[in-house]
Image (cartoon, rainbow, N blue to C red; front, side, top):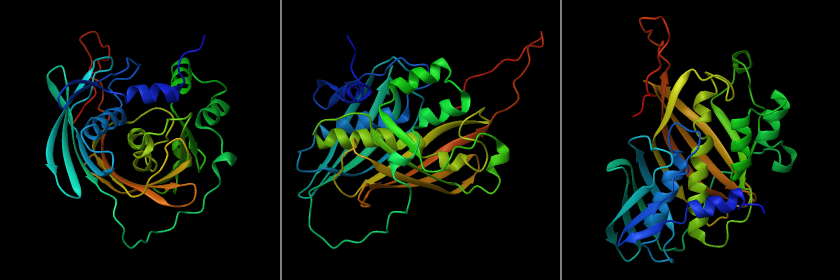
Length: 307
């Protein structure tokens, strides 16, 4: 008997438990990660906010800060403040708490759909997703086989990722590479028909690859890491309805990196070329410091720096 699919597990992860008025609890899987994946916390927080808003008001924007690293395996409590319920806009503030400490906060705005004029920049011309290799297959081809931890993560991955440009594996291949990246994504199975689930699933996915654009000029996306990285803040604007289990193109670029912080912005298009979401994110990029030595001469690593 097989267990739930990765897409089903994602939907379950986003199905929060309501434990009191305006208070929700989310699961945090115990995985081989140092901290809880930021996209999970953002997606769950948006679910909590959306559960307190009428269905005719979809989310149109969110602004969030990652304050402390989450602990895998420990439930996260989401406290929702009903800031405003206006005639056209609704505002919610969410605080994520783990073991009595605030790890994340989010403000989300919801808007009744209204008619208006339209324009958008065109989607860049890129190969169709079916013509590109799956990320896991591209890595397997290069390495021969995936290390067991990566193989296990690939089996549990809820999104099919296909990079438009080939992966770089060495610093020599990075010469002249611009801080830009593009990747096709879609959930690996059906996410159902609840628009809030699709919005929160895409919020989850939006944190998976955006900072790639910052890293591209300085180190390969696969291989040893020269920097401790962490998401600092995250903002999204939702322009049109979409389904996260259908192909979308995530176009990403980094206009600047300085002071140990890198800024990335993304545009998400559906298969027909409609701009559906805009994203901005800043990440910490702190160079690894030499490990101190004990009196016996053995290296000692401290905790990963966090914001």
